Image (cartoon, rainbow, N blue to C red):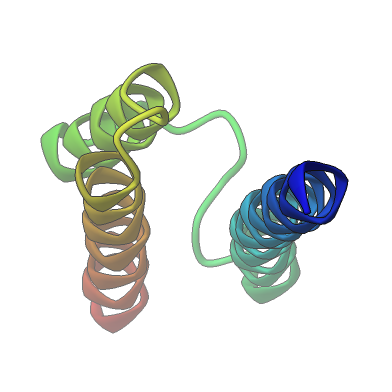
Length: 95
């Protein structure tokens, strides 16, 4: 019975690790799409300065990585950072 419990917990740990990796891959993919859109529109020059909103978005994503052990806090920071980055891009495209 103890062996089955160990195996059960091992599977749960592997499931959580896979889920965390999936979220990180999705976040990196979202940033790649955002960067591609910025470069393709050519309305925003690659050498332009970082806006305060983009800086805050970057800081939130870094905080999400740092506080990643507490999933609710970590993913909340990452989600907020991605959302702010998208808002910043939309604001820059409208100018």
